[in-house]
Image (tube, rainbow, N blue to C red):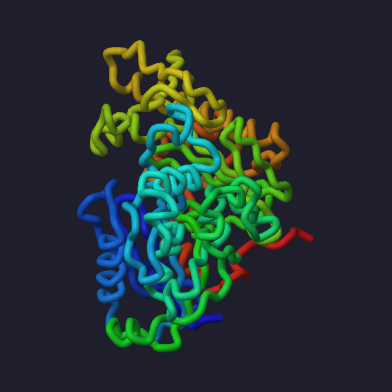
Amino acid sequence: MARVAAGLDFGTSGARLCVIDRRQRRLFESAIRYPHARRQDCGDWEQALFELLGSLPPGLRAGIDALSLCATSGSVLWAGRDLRPRSPVLMYCEHREADFPAGHPGPLDGLARLAWLWNQQGGPDALHDALALHQADWLFARLREGGLARGGVSDWHNALKSGADPARCAWGEVASAQAFASRLPRIVAPGSRLGRVDPLLARRLGLPRGLRLVAGTTDANAAFLASGADRPGLGLSSLGSTLALKLLSQRRIDAPQHGVYSHRFGALWLVSGASRAGGAVLREMFDDARLRELSARIDPERDSPLDLLPLPGVGERFPQADPAMRPRLEPRPADDVEYLHGLLQGLARIEAAGYARLAELGAPRPTEVLSSGGGAANPAWTRLRERALGLPVRAARQTEAAFGAARLALLGTAVFPRLPP
């Protein structure tokens, strides 16, 4: 096990760094914002990478034994073996015509984006020397000795939505049937060793020449690792711009018709589903200060008479996949406290329906739910959720994806849960 480990998180609006010791105590944290949050390129990632590592105190930087990172899994590009992009970066939040049914991304959205870029950039004639990469794949190649000289490497978490089969540690039938199948990266287990840092880069950044690189994960899975959840039936609800549910299960559950998929998580499976509803709708109506003020005046022991469905637009993916589903944001009472009460109760009902859907599909019923994201600090919402779920709800002690990536670097594959006795 490493003595000091670093984790990097490359998210939607910026990147973060966390360094921990072998007792998982935070030693250092740093963050940087991208110049263009939802329109990124490899130059933005490289600049953030170098600035974050450069922000480390020299003594701490020289003592790091292992490094891992997480990133947005659906963000893809084509790049040459020299690491230079052969296409634009297509972010996970960017959809293109003919990618998916309107408003309803499918389970292979990463593969759909790679195929769209392949066709747009001219296919095999224009991309004869290019490799298909996810955001994390490119970043690791920038760090790793040898780069892309021997091809790309991806972990099966980042590669899942591009068609990887984590049960076989190989590409599935749909991905293997693509014209560019030979350009897809080799798949490895998250937490496995990828090699060592490039010596020239280590000298440039003041990193140890023997620094081990550890295969990463997605940003959402890193947040789950940060929470410390390690047993079947323990759920994590991420209350951010959207409402995302994750639940450890001994069974793999894949139901694309309901927007449900599973990541291989050691000996268990991390069953996941994400509604389009969430905090983004609330922020369109109230700023943070107003949300705190109104929430403090809600009586969460009382049901709201409103039946609201706080979607950001037409279309839902989970717990009910319906591209024609419309939001219900009216009637809006004159009292904003009553209105927010109804919105939060609507979100609580979606969360409860989500866990019920997972159980219906064969996952365990949750025994407790941890919370992450901005909504985890809202006591009124927490109590409304407890009443809707009929379960205890508490904030996760750690929620930063960079901390989860640092745990992955520290412990390797041992960070993932094993079968219960």
